[in-house]
Image (cartoon, rainbow, N blue to C red):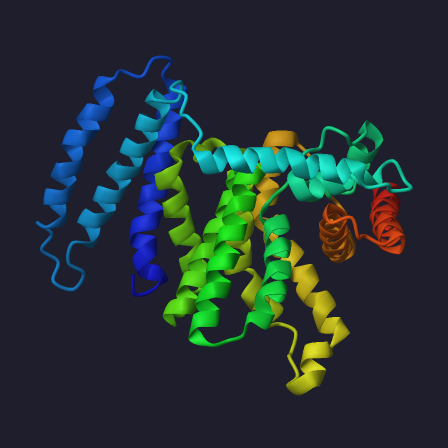
Length: 368
């Protein structure tokens, strides 16, 4: 695709077809098996329409849109028909599952002074929230920070930044860049499998893969183009994801960041040089408009599903997101060193204090 307009011409109708197929599957109690075969007949017809388009300025665009719309419908209905067929896990999936359980046991073995720290660290790193008490869940919910407990692209993004820093000493030669990119993609992919491959985590992994691939090929990529490409790839691989709330919120949040964040961020004049990079007020402004951009697109769906709206979402995100990043960095370091039995007690205490500070801040916000 030459630009985001090209991928929009295919990704958008494909996503619309998948959504239509999911609606059709939910509306009918028994999907006739003849329907996928009917769609299989329609696909060649759509292909014929594609090459019969006569618009000289934009040849075949309408036909391609029809083709991808029907392709999305075909994929979605077929996924619904085969939903009850269990698929065996591959060897890599089984290994990832075993390592995921081992990671949970390792986190449980770390002697945190506070009883609430271990379960929260386990939730942030593995997605297992079973050990978190109702009072802590309520603090996160009432403060508008429930998305922090739900393993998502935010968590994988932070881990990806940590991994990028770790692999940076490998250098910037062509061979080193290839090695670093492969390590980053493989590690992110294994973590995705290890934590259950939720739709929002898969979305983040596809983003990472597209970004690393584009960097290796020397190709530029926009947030909008990456978003539409990831949407198409994920729905092609797993059409049923379109019905997942996590999938919907994840893509809505990124859509808000892609469309609304740039113009809002540019309202604050940016100074050049070190002063512009270190300007604390601009950092606060960027954090605030990032929260606004996400909420503008996700709030309607959250209100529709739960009839709630986080009144203090800007304060929550300006406070909780930096603290969450610090907690995850400390948690990853503590867990990694504990795996080798060389974690100093001071690091465990520091990790514990960071988690308790996060909980305390959210408790203050929830009491407003």
